[in-house]
Image 1 (tube, rainbow, N blue to C red):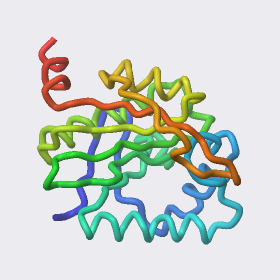
Image 2 (cartoon, one colour):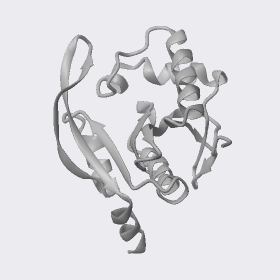
Image 3 (cartoon, rainbow, N blue to C red):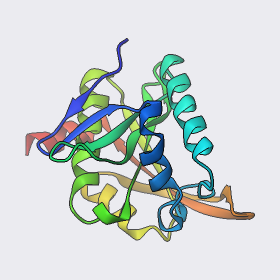
Image 4 (tube, helix red, strand yellow):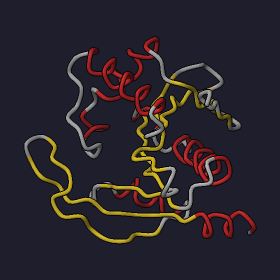
Length: 184
């Protein structure tokens, strides 16, 4: 399968390549972004390069798809969005995303996630999309719930980051619920 390019009114979701190392590093080197990301902040550009390699490997092994979020107006990469833990046989994946703080609260995350939801349910025919979110990340939990996700529970000590174990909330959206919301 060729890498799917997705478009919204303001965004283009593109394949992340090594020409995007600086943009990915710029986002993931910020403590305010990685605080709830599940990994320590990047301190070297090579970490962004390795992450891009992992995105490519996951795509080719059909274990995930990660898009760069590019603003059409200025062609700037402002973050990523994608599917992790993709299981085509079980028709499920987990959604993940991050955006540079300069672009928070502008609707870009919502716009990108909506397009990935449509692709996941209509093109990949997934049945379930999950999300694992730090309980303190109220903005992300609220965003997902506005998009139809429901909280399922708490995973205690699920993520190890910055030498600490962190609880995470589990949210999910089923294809049936998503399709019903699209009819309204």
